[in-house]
Image (cartoon, rainbow, N blue to C red; front, side):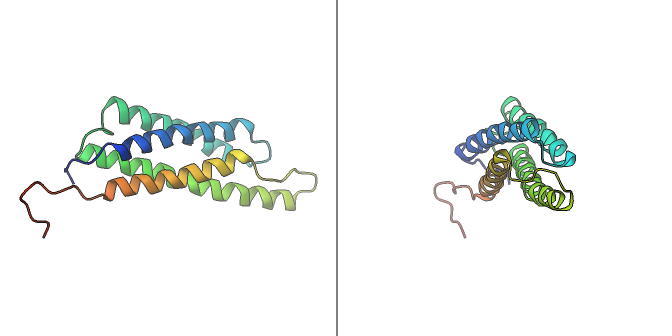
Amino acid sequence: MSAQRSSRGHIIVAALLGVSAAAHGGLALTSTASPAFVVALSGLLTVAAIALVLVGLLVEAARFGGDREDHWLLACAIMGAVGVAVGVAGPLVGTWLAVSRPGSNGGLNPWSLGALLIDALTVRVAIFTLRRSPTPAPGRSTR
């Protein structure tokens, strides 16, 4: 998969990763009712999203075609998938803990919902950009 692709998808993925880092950072800092592992994973996802944005921009993996770009997009999709898993597991475990422990505060943190939606969109755009077929050279058949 070393063909050139348009850079628009990569710019969108990098921007979504930045928003995802902000959402996971907000979740890690403001979450009081969530379990400790959700807060810890959210903090790790914040660091991972920032690292992926920096790698994508500094190493130019987000701007050029080839294997580096494919690996970067796959890493972005995996980070988003882990974020979705944390976004789904967090409220479920938090609700279970709120029901099982009297006196604990349940409820949904808005940062959790935002992080879930942004991570799902990041996975979708990264995979779409990765799978996008390059345009054939003039005079070449697509068959």
